[in-house]
Structures are given as C-alpha cells and as structure tokens.
Image 1 (cartoon, rainbow, N blue to C red):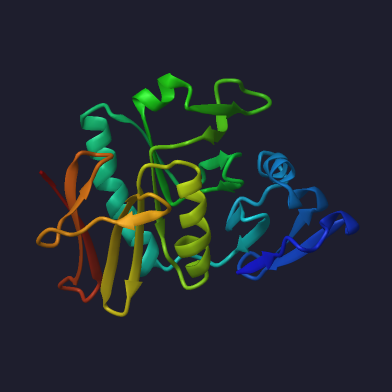
Image 2: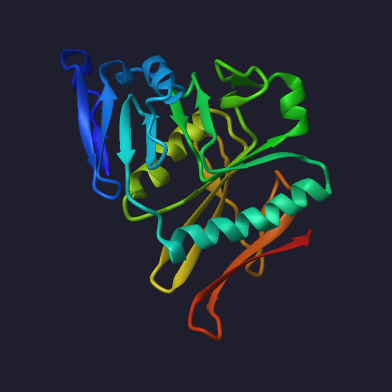
Amino acid sequence: MATVPSQFDLADFPAIPLWDRESDDLVSIPASANTLTGFRQWALSDDFPERGKITYVAGGLIVDMSPESLENHSDIKSEISRVLLNLVRQQNLGRLHIDGALVTNEEAGVSNEPDILYLAKQTLKSGRVTLTPTVDDPHSSKEIVGTVDWVLEIVSPSSIKKDKVLLREAYFQAGIGEYWLVEVVGNSIDFQVLVPGELEYVAAEPKEGWLYSPTFGCEFRLDREKDEDDFWLVTLHRREE
C-alpha cells in the first residue's frame, strides 16, 4: 500500500507515478488529487485506474494496488453479498452496491469505494444522498455523494490502518449508521457490527454468537469452516430477532 502524505504539496509536482506490479502499468496521480475536490475530479475521469483501491481520507491519499486474497477477502465478500442482496431484493429495501461504487462525504473529507454499501429507499427519496451522473449519460451514475446507510470493509494485510482506524473515524464523522468490519485472523474470522456511540463507533455485543443489525432489522452470524475439498467455506447466517 502506498500513501501520499498530506504534508507534501503535490502542486509542486506534475504527477506522482506509481508502478502497478500486477498489471505492469504505470499509475500516474495528478497533482490536483491532494484535495478532496481534485481527487473526485480524477476519480470520475477516464484516467482513473480500473483496478486497485485509491482512497481519499484524513487529508491524504491511500493507494492500494494489491490483489484481493480469494479465501480471506473475495469469498467473504461474495457470501455477504449473496445473503444481503437476496434480503434487499426480496423485501424491496433499497440498493446494494458491490465494489467500484465511489462514495463521497464532503463533511467527513472522505471519498472511497467500500467493499459493499447499502442505500435504503427512504435515503434515496429524502435527498440525503445525490448521484453524480456521467458526462455522456445522465441516466448512468459514477458517484454517491452524502451519507449512505451501511458499509462493509474486509480487512486485508495492506488495509489494516485504513479500514480499522481512518475509515472507521471517517465513516462515523459521515454519519453512516452501521459499519461491518470483517477480518480473518489465523483460522478464525472476526466479524464486528459497529454502530454509532457518543463519540465513536462501538461494537454490538453478540448474543450466543449472533449480532443484531439495526439497518436490516435482524441478526447475523458469520462462520468459516473447511469443506470436503479442504477449501474454506464462508457462511453468513441470518435470523429474525
């Protein structure tokens, strides 16, 4: 993970090049991206990289071009997406976005692509968020501006500080009502449902291994075990409270 610290004035440089070892491409960060406005302009342009995660938070950029672990990241995201997408669609709750959806909250100074995010229908109707359309198609959006209802981040070795400290603080300041944080630790999986406290997010207390989600109005449990082929099998269980 590469970090562009905020104490450097990027305006002194034409661009900051970063080499993406996986694709053998050169990723060039424009000088204007050292501000939230400049970062958003870059992120919405055709010059923004199609892979990797580039986040504006805490007054600076975090660039992570590392590929996701299949077992410790991608499989977990797929399972959580499967369960929640079915729930959201069956109950007509709103919209669930998986990967690549840029979310910006100007008050919290953050612009990021969460692993998964959720927007309730009422949030969309209330004007709590706005959608930024693409230049050539007003019916296609590339950015959500405002406060979404729920986000998920799955911690990778390269994103520990970003997910557990910087985004945790920024999401709280943005007024996001629920933050799921998942991390594989050895052979176990740490699953937290974080909800706003007085000054910061606090972790919901489990009840017999189940965690209540205020956003979705039910309880969840996340398990991981080896299947018959010795692959990790992740299961998100759901039950009504």
